[in-house]
Picture (cartoon, rainbow, N blue to C red):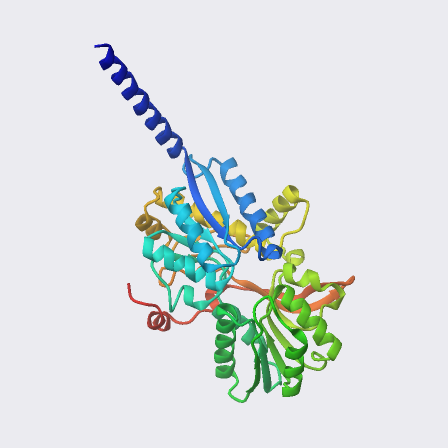
Length: 401
């Protein structure tokens, strides 16, 4: 009898413990987040600040359907295999409702492949390769940032107006750089059949030897240059290009260079007149951006970078998807995300059903110097929805489910 009481008591204790654990689990929703924090701090630190601000705002407003939002973050170190390991840990050990994040295109593709195999919802934040929503797209993967195609189409709109006919390209030799050059050349040649591509330089990402690159481009004597390098590689390229006069009397069109995280390190070496995509936070006068800017500066006593916008909007979008689905079931999350419109600091965006690409746009302008610092001038916002191929073209590119 005594032994039965002991077993019964132990049984109730175990049951209560399980119920308490279950209740605790049900009182919060966990999102897994992966990024290259140690490899690319210039972008990922502002990105982290952005998503932390979003989490704070979401929870202050009552969470997701009354449940607290918790983000569990992991560093992939810039390695696709490490990103997949992190994704597996987040799903199997942390029981996250979805995966978000990634920066480099090859890492985004690796996590997208994991998500497809394991049937886990993945909202890619930053990777720009077109493959993530088209050639290697899958039903479990969505993407926030405007893709290489979208940004190339915006840049080509301006580049096609240049009189230059001889073009050279400089891009990092991995998925992002290869994808950006390929789509820019395709779109530019369609608009301007009279141009020639006279040289291509493919330095390794993060390890550019700028002297030989600049020398080789100069030897090809182009009238215009497409640049796709960013970060420390961009600084080295600009410094060497300025020293050797590469950019003198030559037009330059450049992906991402107008983003503060890449423009700021150039300081007074910033070349003027480059046509760029970027983020002129200091000249955006919309109510949505003003509210974001005020909240960001109040929390961090610093101005936002483009990474801040991406981190913020990634988690805001993830929360909207979870709230609409009211479930962590991947199929319900997909159904909720397809066609979902959400607010952003750049205005309302929609996650398209056909390819899971968001319609977030980008700012186009030119580089200039002001008070010894690089800025963007003559800027305008281009809506992402205006720079995408037809549905028929997308259906040809994207694998059938």
